[in-house]
Image (cartoon, rainbow, N blue to C red; front, side):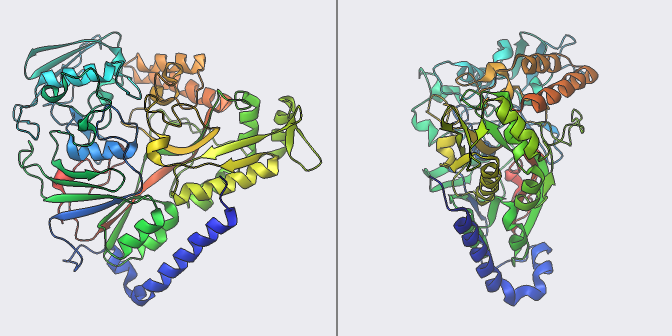
Length: 554
């Protein structure tokens, strides 16, 4: 299915114009109303926060999901051993401390990690959370019968000892410097699940728990209608104390124009992860505060390196030379973020500033296409052995920013001689696990346009680019199993010496640029629009803006 490029752009422009006209009456106070502190707005439902989100949730069981938005929802429902605050720093959650070499939580050889647990943490059914639940969660991640998307870094654990209900001792097969940052971090593949409710099942794939979970987080599920709404109520037994909110209504609205309308008419209080194209309009709304915190989420295109002709590195390079990357970042993402090419954030200590986007170079692209056997016909379109070069690009349906990016990429590749069609789908279909027949995990695409976010601010891309993480064994949706990338990843993660790690990661970024399994467009700033009556919201530069939902109020 190929949407009309001009028609889609016109519809967005007409919508924006109409909304701007509706707002003109309050133009003289735009700046004050978008930035002033909250003051009992008439539309506020005190104690109940209404969130609007455009992605359907594929699963509420953190073991079985791949979606970033599910990871955010896990912050509301579950606890981890650790979490991350609004400075991107690891903080204790169920654990009393984040293990380090300095506090002796990490052994001198880097192979033994010890956690001591709080004694006042309970699941929402009143059963205490203990070391047995932590070990059980690890076992379920490693259970081959569960449709987990990846098992990294949990597969580096040799064994876990639980000498008492409040001590967890993790023995690693080899030293793994990013391990503490990943292990049982609240979110997908990290939220702690209840052993007493789930340990009798051979797998978790089709349980009622997926839609009616029991966690130890600040909120509990009151009602869930998949694809429509998730209603949550405060957990009075949450270990930090009852959250300040009484309830959260999480509305799933898979159209960003509708979300823009609903935040402007105050049918929702919190428009989460808004697109750049709506930023200026959101800033003009009365009673709405807009934040744009740069974070470690990269918008990129991912090539299916297992599918011809993208299995030829020359074709991938030629496509990279055919796209105006700077124009995409500027015209689609409005410069609200940082440019890049590889997958280590500019804010990271491991970032290589010399690795920049492929320049727009049609002549070089033609040379590479020709070297791979693709020649232009009289109509300018590329063909090989009588077959035209036809590809598809896929993203989440209804995400206006990415749909606009698809249009521009489609135009660029048309000029290069490639017939590129658009084939979008819902997030829960695209990002479903391999076992759940996910489109990306099963490799049923040519070019994917989506975002990866570092689940922790660790410059370790093993999960999404590791040669041993190709589905069904992981989330490497490029299907590029490059041995050198694997070598550099191992060098970086098996040393606790930052200089050694950085040297390996610099080589990794250069290799990624050379074989281009994917290409970053921009490192995004996460845009959130919230009711000015909402207090306690502190967006984060990594992991999740929901990290302190227990402290939100309205």
